[in-house]
Length: 266
Image 1 (cartoon, helix red, strand yellow):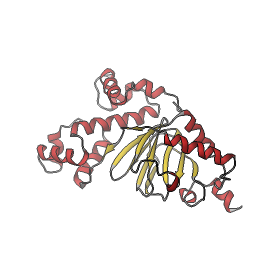
Image 2 (cartoon, helix red, strand yellow):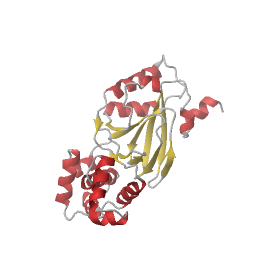
Image 3 (cartoon, helix red, strand yellow):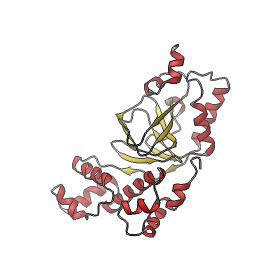
Image 4 (tube, helix red, strand yellow):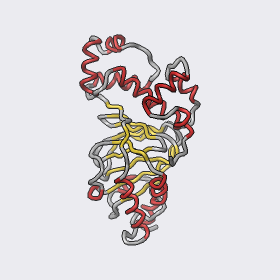
């Protein structure tokens, strides 16, 4: 088997970092519960899946990526990925010199139907493709579509302070937890006032706003995986579906049922 054909069939991201083309596309499938340990890439990455939902975390934040979205990950940024439901990842690795127009930090972006189909097509191309041939035209269209992507305010900022980060990770693990700020302050041996001030300073959000955003992201992951709206609402500690739906709509601009039933390419 030639080196080229090995790369074409590879599901190892390392094989996509040094190919000459502007864009390399990797298809890889994961089962729910799989975790990709912290790592980084030499190329920038557009983390996308045509089905399934992922949660991506860095030192600075957490993002949920359902099929209608993608996460732009700049080169060199250390990140981990948790697979929240069975996922068909179709990810792009983009050379820095052709991605200068993209953000310098992580951003969730909406994926157009055209871009989704172009990404799928790119995974069917040889990794070492003819840049002047038909494959090169597909890549040119991908780069054109990337220029038009809109960033979405779906980041959950993470604090750097180890005690605050441990608190946030506990909240992420149990988003339905109802303990008030005062009770959480006791767990790290500080006052509620000090915790509130430090939380705002490190994340830019109040404790309550951060916890609500964590619940929104958790709901997006569950709904994106096909869970019933009622079950998600109850699991997140809401006493009624209507209260949960109102919160979700305020945060995302759409209802939980619309988000859950949205076609993958919309």
